[in-house]
Length: 89
Image 1 (cartoon, helix red, strand yellow):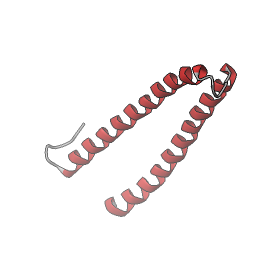
Image 2 (cartoon, rainbow, N blue to C red):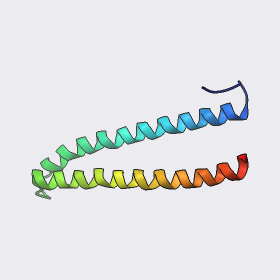
Image 3 (tube, rainbow, N blue to C red):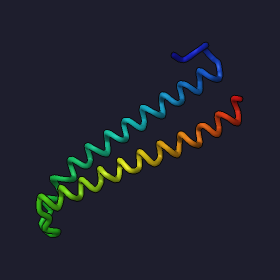
């Protein structure tokens, strides 16, 4: 999986794997915080939010995460292809 020990490709592969795990951990953290904040928003009387309103807020947040993931994934794919084509062909 990681190639020859000490090679540049092996170090780059490890770096990518670490970055991917960090992204997974941060994405999971977002969802945990969203779940905790949902209950806090319902209990916060000064704003007077109802359950459907809090549901809409959380849905907007999840939809924003979807749009961001699709946009950044596409952008990273395009930029990655240019960089790979410039340096590795």
